[in-house]
Image (cartoon, rainbow, N blue to C red):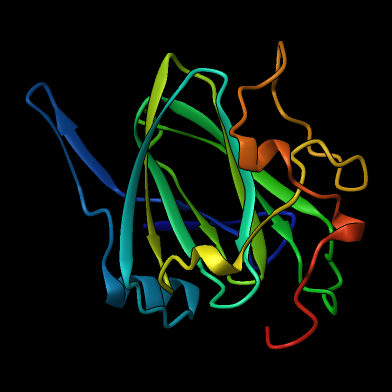
Length: 184
């Protein structure tokens, strides 16, 4: 496993070691001991999620104001552009974003720490998206920031308007959002 730092030091790109030949491939998608050695993070993952989305679907920017979730995300089919936005008010990178392409071909994973909003855009015909979380889903604490907030300025690779859920259409701007004041 190889760890790549992003523009925001707490957000990481994870490249697993993949062993492949004409028969297919094998990779270890997660190893707690190795994770801790390479990242210095002691995470307890409590929930695994799987979503499938069509091309042009944009999900996010989601976070939980209470019970914040760290997320280790990956794509097992298709390609997405994945983004993390720092919502830790005391952070030097507050309001900044980091992103990367995740695909079934590059095997990359993306670590989105607690205190960050998360979103992704599907670039392929469909994408199967898997993620581990450090806390349970709590819909009563879920918040959504607009995907196109100019104060954040995410450079989404879009050719046309994305497909959004009603919840994502109702997202608020960063300046109107509840953010994390302490604890990270």
